[in-house]
Image (tube, rainbow, N blue to C red; front, side, top):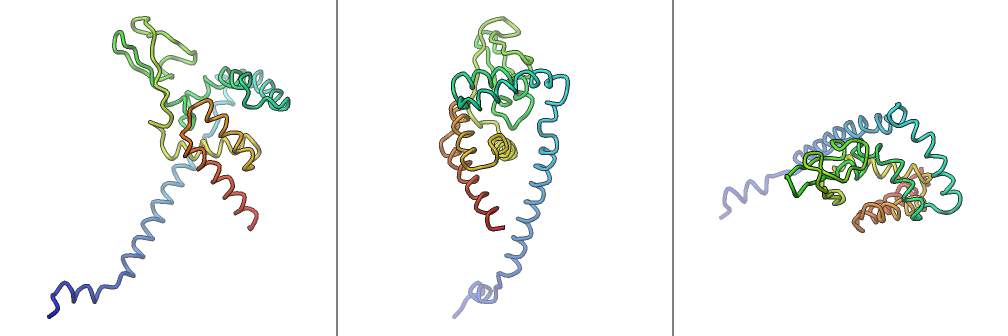
Length: 199
């Protein structure tokens, strides 16, 4: 003899539940894209302000010259990048530097690069002892930040998979990116190229 549960299971039609799930995924996707779009609209706007534009007017040609000389990713290039973009990166959450934390083992102070100002301070603002950085990649980043970072890096090297490999190589050296994330970035660049080729 069949139980009530068996009878209900036989009557169950999954169509509505599946349609509800599809609609909910689409709703969540639209919310995600809306937030990401708001982030992208503001992307690098600070570079056009007096706070950053003068430095980029001077420093960007030097970076371009190093790239044209085949020195992209070299120690000289990395030093020039770090010097130029530190004050920019600490204000934008799609850059790993934005999420660095600093700790003082002396007085217990902790803070972000923004609290230290645009200079690379190495001493605690409270007790003047050496501060210790926590530069763990991605611990405080969001998927929104990673998507914008991926798009930023893709744009830097012409939007090609080969360019993304270069960006990932530099990112791996500068930030200690996890290898799995490096592969995801590279795979995504290849998938984008394949998609664009068949459109």
